[in-house]
Image 1: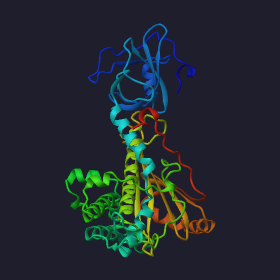
Image 2: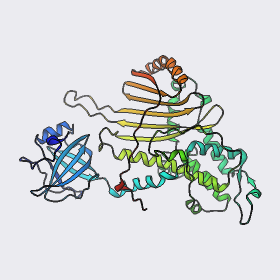
Image 3: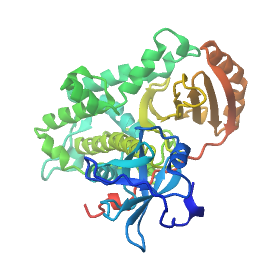
Image 4: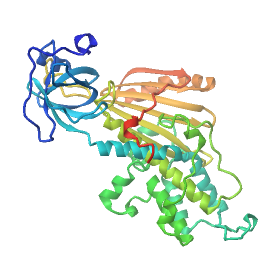
Length: 450
């Protein structure tokens, strides 16, 4: 809602001012209004002592003195007065506000250094991402063909000998393969089998997106032998040790990047332009493999930082989910070729209706987007929305033959969902692919000279 017809509000006649300072050094703010403060806060559905995130849309100075902020709170614009003291806030800042009676209090500002650090790290890694699918294909090829040894000074490339993968690297890869989802074992109805849910949880947990959390909890990589990101780290360690190099040598490498990830790099899910085969017959060199592994690590890290960026904006932008998780899950085709499925999970929190149903708890809505490219069916995209006990799903298929086949299977899917105790609200298959907005990084957060 734009107050006063979307124009800058005039000085209020009954402004509520919080006075005083909070323990964060930010002043309390009173609500500038033509409506009462209580009415405006009620429209925000913000309970007493409840906090939320807001975004500073504008910082204004009044002609008659004093300062004013235009905040974006839960999709609404709200003008607030901060008194004579100028707040240490800039346009675009994300702040935390809390309702105290009929007053809003600024109780904190997202740490600028932390927010900028995440955005900076994300921006630095965007140009250096290696497609995980093609990278995995190359690694599996090296298990059979080996790697070319590092050239010595004066040695011709044709004279470079091929050496097998170090035992530690081969062991790490074999463990990863054994834990990956395999199309040969995913038969219709497997999702309802005992242990099916636990298996899916394991694939999510070992996708690499939680590697650092695992290390913080356990302090060792040995407790997560099949975590995707930690497996890549172990392969790197083994290759460096074989060459008599230290980890510092890896930090000086320029990662290999995949061209398909340069276009709209912050669009997720984003299918590859084509399936990747098991690589070239010509063995790669150790140096090339290390650079490729650096790009693969960057890709996983980009997904982690991208998730943090989207989650940090929760509540500060209209329609933004409360939390977002982006993952790429490796799996194997019946021919044992590696593929990746891109998964986006979002949580949308529903406000508790305390007025009409005080006994009813707030129920979150979960939205899942799963994208994959199959050899015969082509690109498929699944959109699922779940709010207990209701579920709806839309399936997108690029190929007409796949669209026809999916439509034939929809009654069976509807029955399977009903057997799980779910109410199927909507279920359909469409031709084409859905459009997803690309994340934007604010330039003020990114030092392009770094």
